[in-house]
Image (tube, rainbow, N blue to C red; front, side):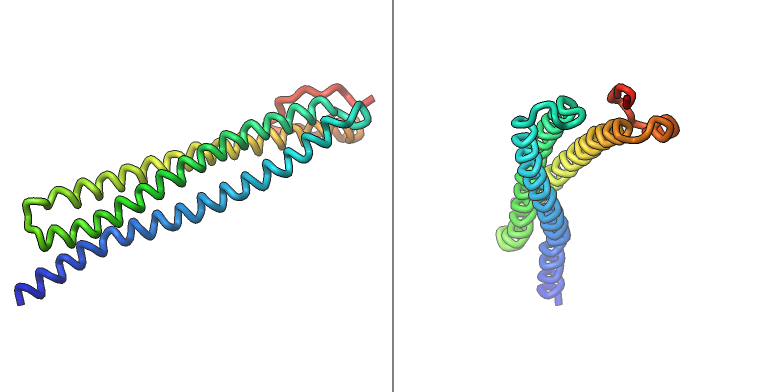
Length: 183
């Protein structure tokens, strides 16, 4: 029974990285979706920016609109770069976890003298997974900052078009942009 027990231990050890492989796959899918949404948003804002560039003063707050769109495009560019870096890091982590699983099997045949290899690969994979998670935290914070900038402008636009008595009663908690009162 000793060979069977040893084989089961090796198979169990090889399956352990599979949980982390699955986690990497989920993070890659999520990050890819986020990147796709950023790309779609950049395309929409780029079209909007071109449209605003051709308009003169016929729109209210035209300069503010251009500034907001430009700021959002800048933030989206940063987000896309961070998400691309995160995806690369998750793919590296995935590769390292697959290599860990293979190395565990090879160590079972080669003997204990190479037993540090799967441990080193597993630790490297976990480190990349951790770094990738940090990049997603940074990207999420940048996404919230973009949303706040856009919402601040929407508040500004709302205050511009709203009747003065209504505008005076409502304030945004993140209202940073200054608006001239509606004449």
